[in-house]
Image 1 (cartoon, one colour):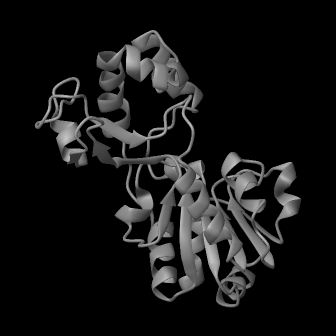
Image 2 (cartoon, one colour):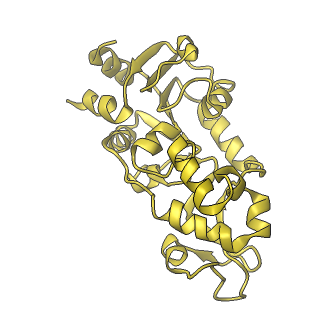
Image 3 (cartoon, helix red, strand yellow):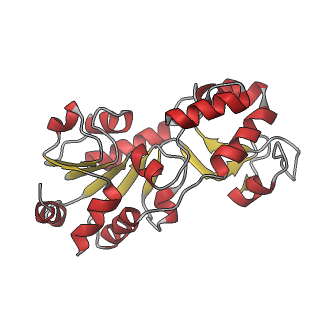
Amino acid sequence: MDLMTLKNAIDTGGRIVCLLGMNVSSDAGCFDYRDSDNAYAIETNYGYSPEEIFSASFYNTRPRLFFEYYHKEILNKLGEPCEAMYTLKRLEDRQKVTAVITRSIYGLPRRAGIRNYVEMHGSVYENKCPHCGEMYDIEYMKEAKGVPFCRKCGAVVRPQIVLDGEMIPNGKITQSAYEVERADTLLVLGCSLRSTLAKNAVRYFDGSRIILINEEEDYSDNIADLVFTGRPRDILPKIEN
């Protein structure tokens, strides 16, 4: 599929909602526990798998080890928005892209300056005391020694992210569905159409076209109307050339 086809599809796509897959986050340098080398290193260093540590039960019962992992592996490996993210920002400025939806917790859309985004699993950039409601920024969490405590009441500050074993807030699901239902085009970046993010969104999509840009080919690609194989960071910015 040539780039002119992609450019025309974007230009004539009406309201475009972008689904930002986990491969975009990994490609941007964000920590990816799904990587086999990362998973092995975590289990070797901490004695638990990444899935076990990053769970609600582990957070509640072993907060010190949870936050050791959180600081070293998550907050130290936030990555940086790639040029594809800034392309989305400019498409939003042109009123082409109306929303970006992601399961990533690393805040790439907001860091790229995108205004309308839905972070289904929350963000490391939002932290809250569950007792008094005081909010804390990411710098406070980075500077905390060990477990971060609230300056007002002394309770443990909770990153506003969805851990394994927790449900996605209904408000996030409703907001995501609302954006997808209104879309004319679904632009899927960095995940297959059988990923959780894409499968859930496609259920609500009643538009005319699905565009997929992903480095890995998958049997679900045939659901899309246009498929471009490659990294979104390499392909999407080229539509502006």
